[in-house]
Image (cartoon, rainbow, N blue to C red; front, side, top):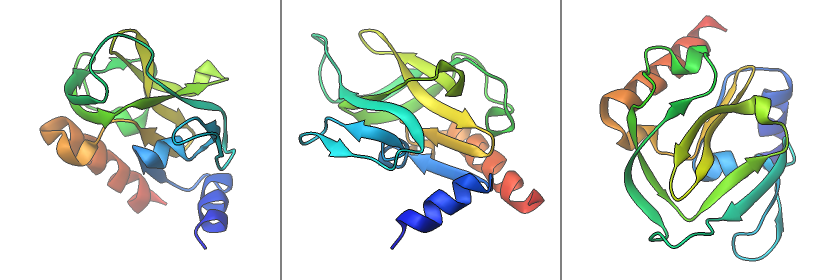
Length: 144
């Protein structure tokens, strides 16, 4: 029963934070566990890493900031955050990409469209940087 409330929140441009699977479910489709339909909120696909590095990526990696937004206020380019994943999103519209990260190649590690913000990394495990992102989200919610 969460699909409609999620879509309604996003359509109304109310603050929305997706983390890991919460990012991936927003896309049209995913290859994880076989082809699956997503919520179709963001055009694009979820694909498995294709390289010779260890999969899943587990541990700390850096963010490259691609856009300035309230959700990333106070987060510096090159900040480290914590990842645990084997798949990543490929948005059709690159303007939604908020951050990228390099793991064998550059991939989208966070998206932002209006008040929708979603990360492949785990802010709740990312110490000061993650707490900053969560605090920024809380301030967005309180301002509504």
